[in-house]
Image (cartoon, rainbow over all chains, first blue to last red; front, side, top):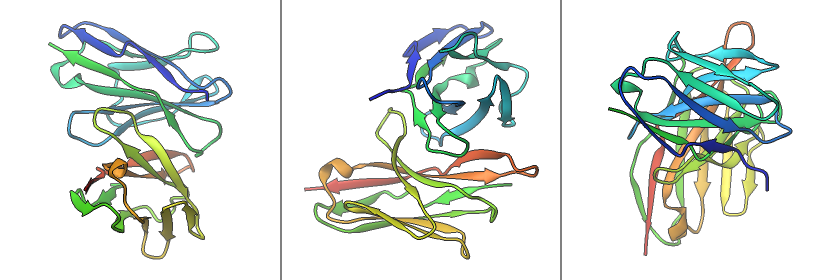
Length: 113
Length: 113
């Protein structure tokens, strides 16, 4: 069964550093998403991406964040100048169609020290 | 503010019990609804989509009440393996027709022997 994959599973970084979180969506999916989940809190939408551009983004997704689909398989989330409060689990998801079921990757746990 | 509300629980039930969760949403224009389950420190996994006419998948039944803006999940004959957090997800429609997938905080279910 096809699945969404994410790397790394755990990323530790120093405050102020830049990190890139990587995702490989399911191959025939066209819609891609990033979410974050701070420990003990709910899953929060960051951004959706379709046809090589951002469809929607939340208030959280400010200039510190960017997304890219650098090739036909990867979908990345870049966080510049990380802050302590960026520590969270970051999930990538993909779906086949607009508003369809989303399939989540296993997540990247980001720890900012 | 567009919200999805759930009773956090925990619901503590014996094996074999029937348990029901509700979820309310604020945006009456919302069109797509889902239940996911999330195990501790894992990614959300689709349990079932929720259709207007209601739908059933084995021991699980989902209902949508558009007039009252809530969805429900009924679990019959609870198993120990049903212990998890159940997430209500609503695609909140924005002005212009785009949407943001919005998660509830989740309802914790503990099934005990």
